[in-house]
Image (cartoon, rainbow, N blue to C red; front, side, top):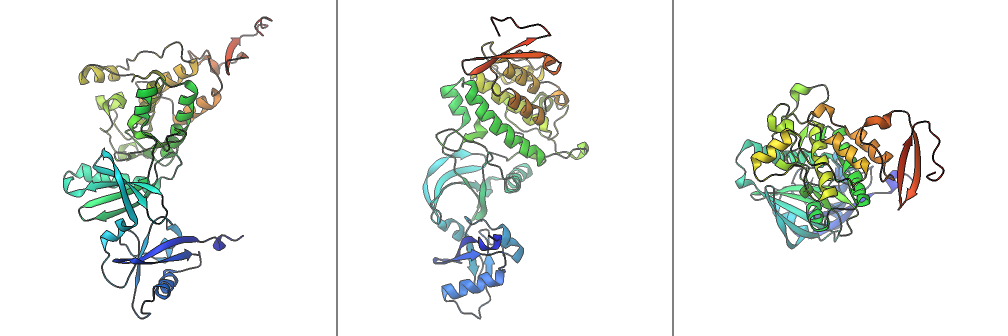
Length: 395
């Protein structure tokens, strides 16, 4: 079946008169002129009126834009008048307030066209005064529009409404990872693994897209549903770009929540938007899931900063499988250039996903050795033998 035979179906409203709408199927061969002509016929409009096809921000669409139209985003047909900004919100029905965060308030809405629930974040532009805040707002817009990953919150639409900027995002109803760890932690290792591999895959995707999140923390990892099977990363408001081989041009980062901030940011020795920042923060997240405590804590801010700068944290309990010990040691290293990168982290997780108590206290696993595994309680206990015949009782 040819791709052109499977069109996207979109709803087009008459600008300023939302009671008038029509459904249009966007075949690849259609032009904006074809779409407008079809709307005129369905809405019984005067054929001689020059109309424009607008997106939810009131911007006129071209033929090239049609290919990238999101079928959940409404379009509007203007007969020459200015775009009615109130039109964008008309397709949403408010359900309840979800909370306060970042630059504004978040509400739960239902899309009247698709019946799907969405979270809409309202940013009060009158409260944004500093250039840094303006940059943060537009940073989140541009970054989320360019990132499409199953474990990154999906930005459906962005539009302005009076003195507010509105972010329409997929609604994640499962709650924050922070609350789950506080109420149910420490989490079982199998569950930690299932969550971690999703976060690692998403962050690796970001880094491959030259994006550093810079504010990874338990609060910014949320569950898609109450079943807690899928996690999503949110809040890219202080993210930065990094460009390999162009260190002098990298953005500098003083951002991030203190308990997750890497030592080089606090000492200002190297606070570029470097992937190593995310690796440190992710190490703190994994540590917290395994122990229900953050690795760097103290009674005062100064005490916390001192522990981070000197990389002083309690080792994981001996009851936790050794692969986690090695992983944390590889991620929470003082020097950013010595921290494991996302490739090594991914390889480590894949290699040891079925291993329980493994002797990985040092990097000696990279050396040649003989590994003997025995099944125990659903995990593998691995013993290393250097050329010796295994004891039959333990074989």
